Amino acid sequence: MKNSIFHNFSSKTPAYVYDAKSIVNILNSINNIKKDINFLFLYSIKSSNNIGLLELIKPYVDGFSCSSLFELQLAKEVLDYSQVTHITTPGFNKDEFAKILKYTDFVSLNSLRQFMEFSTIIEPPSSCGIRINPQLSFVSDERFDPCRAFSKLGIPLVNFEKEIETSNINWSIIDGIHIHNNCESINFDEMKQTVHRVMSVLNKYKIDLKWLNLGGGYLVNSSQNISPLKDTIRWLRKNYEIDVYLEPGKAITGNAGYLIASVIDLFQYEDENIAVLDTSVNHLPEVFEYQYQPKVMNSHDRSNHKYHLVGCSCLSGDLFGEYYFVEPLSIGSHIIFENVGAYMQVKANMFNGINLPSVYLLENNNFKLLKNYDYNSFRDRL
Ligand SMILES: Cc1ncc(COP(=O)(O)O)c(C=O)c1O
Image 1 (tube, rainbow, N blue to C red):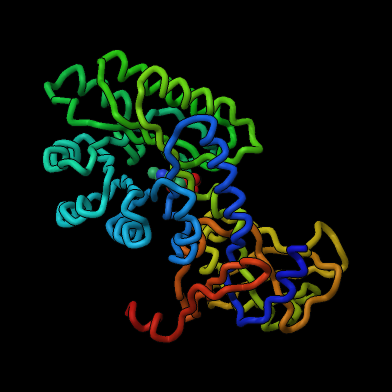
Image 2 (cartoon, rainbow, N blue to C red):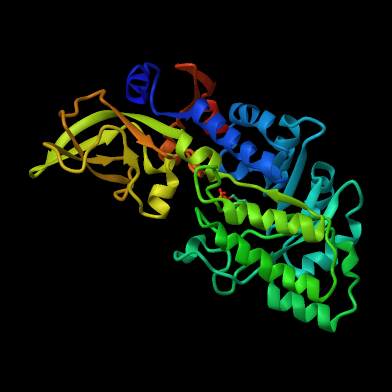
């Protein structure tokens, strides 16, 4: 079914496509979990932030979570008055902080020094929190591990505890704590362990909270084993009566995003077929950053026609990988990369002056244009 819809795509490539139905299905399944247990659901806009996409997601969430002043401004532009924004970043900057407070409802400071500098100027309605690094690692690739050695992300739990014991800081200024220590996990036992570890320290020193933000990094949807998630949130609500926030990103947009490209040249290198696309790894930067091979619709493990799919920039390493197709490719054939909805469009760049892909929403079998770029978009950044 999806195959034939994408087959009908007749606009100019390259193009990012977000499948509205798949996004709404995931949002509904998270809201179904919410019916059972009480938590607040934010979408982490860093994963994908096209405005049309944010408008689609908005009715299903309690707010957006952000990582910079610009993301906050965008979030407030899209959200309704009753919806909230959260921010945490290692990059809080003195010059911007007053503006950040104007746009955020919840701010989680990332270090003890930041806490000393900024906590006293945070006033209601903004709520002051700190980001804690629980020092529990679950991610094998340290480039994605917020708890890697010497991590910059949050106050290490041991340092926090030491500070409580040795300083006379008034910790009642803190309304909440932010924890984000996972990546693409479907194991909610890891969340349970993390929460128990952090709460045992807060308990020991009788630090009361109003809220706890458990971050993103989990592929939340109702089809997985979510009982540890439910148990953890129920336990928190029952024992501490606090608001619990989740802020997934990739869980919402990852599988719902596609990049459609076209073959613009075909030639041989000795006996190998090279297919040049009208896109580049700069449109799917994580493919290059993390050297992974994206899935391509209608490619197979082994079939007759093997191609090296390559990007059209001057970088020799601008390569997507080897793919096999049942039918030979020709000029104009569409190549559809799947599961690329998160951390791609937001990181894409115009290296070599190659235009960015247009952005479409696939809704009721129609491709609705959300955004396109041109020479002015390129020039405006220079
Ligand atoms: C603080 C914070 N919250 C939420 C997220 C979203 O994570 P994901 O897209 O893996 O759900 C991230 C991702 O880096 C993050 O750093």
